[in-house]
Amino acid sequence: MKMGFKSTIISITLTSLLVMGCQGPRYRMFASDTTPRNVKQLVDWETKGNGAGVRSNKKIQLQHYEIPLEAIEKDIRADLDPQVRESVIFKKEGKDYVRWLINPEDTKWHLELKNWLESKGLDSEPKTFFEGYYTASRSMIVVNPETGASMSLKVSTNNTGGNWKDKKQDWVDAKQIRKISDWVKSITEKMNAEHLVIQDEPFAVGIPDIDQAMIMRSLNDVPSGKHYYLPGFSALHSEVGRHIAEINGEVDPAKFWGKHYAESMGHAVAEFTAMTGVTYDSPHSQNFLIELDEKMKPTGRIVLRDFGDSYIVKEFVENTHNHEMAKIWESGNVHSKKLSLAVGILHGNQPPDWMTSEIYDQWSKSFFKVFENDFSNITGIDISALQSSRFNMDYMYGYYGKNYSANNEAWLKWIEYANCLSGESKTLKGKKCLEMFTRHQKSVSCEGVVQNILLN
Image (cartoon, rainbow, N blue to C red; front, top):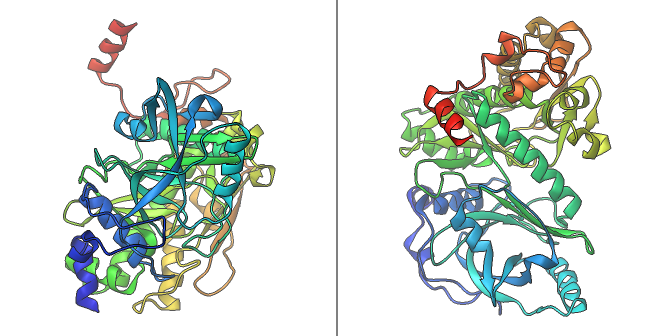
């Protein structure tokens, strides 16, 4: 068992590349092999390296509806990878069409979409093109069989791989996700976030009539082979976590991941929150991935994904160029002069055989220790004020949380200069940024300045 599992750590097994027959009348196995190696590895970890449950890692052919782009609403980043864009949007009879994914486990929501298509006189017959894989959740890893272009697509489904079964992807939520995704990405492009990688969501299409949407999540440079993305819950899998620790010369996986996951997450979340005023409302190991290099060594950077379920500090966001987000965000998740932070590293999962409640407690407290130190360094807020906030713990192997009152002078200065932590030279009211808030901005090269002058 152990050796069989380890073989999938390096590459997908030979048998998963063979045609294994049918999985139901609509979704057959695919024999072609255009999926990039590191994407396959991500699939293996998502489906086999998850203590909450095992899923198939076999490639299947996916179905989709072909919908005229002009018939639906769209929100797409202008710099979306052309190969990825052309995989989802294609030309037919001189018009742009969207391949709208049908989740292979869904028996409910795509039928509503089918009825809508028929009501508009549009083609409602499912088509095939994409190859794909299940993940630990409702998202599908989707591959263009002609080019190997890879992405993650999420649509409504009443059956998922996780604990939350009936998940409708509505258009209102998709638009919020697109807005915060672009904002966070723009910040990380201007700011030095040494421990933070963003898995952004650059594409969404929606149908307001039935309030359904399809969202794309970028796989960044994983398809290129430059990095592996190890899901947080896979680092906490008994065998996967132990094996990668051993690859890196560490016999104690709890010690290894305490440093390279819990503490690294503290660094990344501090950068993210200090620069955005955003915190996850239910942060667990599905939200975080660990970036590994080509030899599966942790780089020290944590990948954050899925910003839809987040709290925002109202006053901070209102003082950025993205201030409109405070008006459209779900009202219950907009906090005034309060920052709520939690971490649930094992929430919704099972502890590995090398984890104890004492180690988990130590990990959670190490996360907050690192977070508070880095957050203080970036914002200028006195660390003693952060450390004085009391811990809340809901249950063993669950969430640890703290609530910080953002109402003293140092917190109010962080709020006033919020725009500076978005990479701008002035506050939203036109005041020049203080050096303490610009020192984390990326420097602009002389070559870049000259190019901008010539272009303008």
